[in-house]
Image (tube, rainbow, N blue to C red; front, side):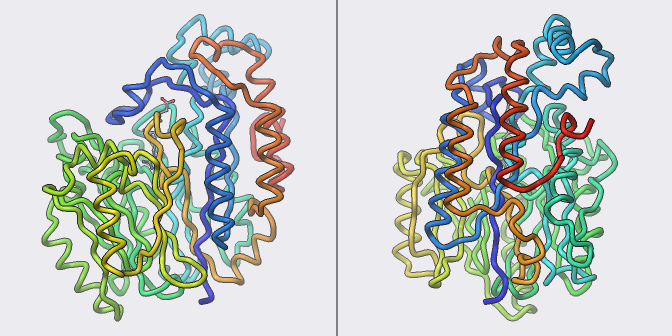
Length: 446
Ligand code: SUG
């Protein structure tokens, strides 16, 4: 196999906290105001990366963003030196300060949507950074994310980093609402774009308004040149799933290669989708393996609580696939039973690994949220060089920085401490040197 999937995990930032900012995200709401442990959070993420490297997979890292985001505060008129800006924001609105301090860039499944070169009309790997316009604390990620992706995927003969979807009402949440099915990583696949509602429709939410607009999905599929030959399918996420706490589709569905694992209530018109997928995959010469959890074996609430579908399915170098799950899935009997059933079918999925990612999970971020998948040919991988790619040595170097620079507890009130900004900037400089990224943060560019 020539092409490989590289997981670019978001490294948790020094300001990881429980601000309760995310709508429709039950875990984040439940933990609002608790004291976080940024050091432990980052080490948990790094140990996931190490586990995947040890499985023989290629692993990348996207750095944390600068938080509190002083640039955003200055745009709002806060002035003086950086410490004055933070003190001013904290006095004016602690909630504003929490918004510009969130470490949410760690969930890189929301960084961008990515289409491999096998799928796109121009044969380039396409990235569209997500505008994340549904939430202020996430919308401020897009500019830095674009810069970071452009620094890593700099070779214009192989990669395009498109502009984010330009209209804020067309909310785009990136790869968290995107699945790809293909016979192998090398071959042209079918890309599934999952939206919650039309930007022009009145919401039919009972509890939570959908974040992803159908129009945004359409713009991304169009700029990635996927439509010719049936390369893209748009599908509506079930409002019942959103109301149950699946604020992104990757809380109720995950794909890899020819496998789609999903909850029976994930999609609005599931039967039509299944028929449609069989047909379009058939046209591309393969049959999809559909692993469905029926509502009787696992309720939507159990799916959301366990984050079973927020697992990663990875293709192993020796053949077959492995599931990388959060330990919450092991602790939920029905979710564990589903995994055991999948393993017993002797299908493509042969192993299950349960990992402790509790710090991120308390903000609603499981294994799949923490990574951006990028399928690359060997030539494309070569064009990145060593930028952002990690081996065990680099992971150890990042662990050292985290141990030295990150706090082991952070309360919301601590966000007002100007020393936190200095500590974070020191850490970001050091992380950037390990990853070879150059000046990607505002404070490094002045
Ligand atoms: O957007 N949580 C994130 C979690 C994102 C998970 N990603 C995927 N499902 N792919 C969100 O809801 C809470 C952070 C805070 O309150 O600071 C938050 O943004």
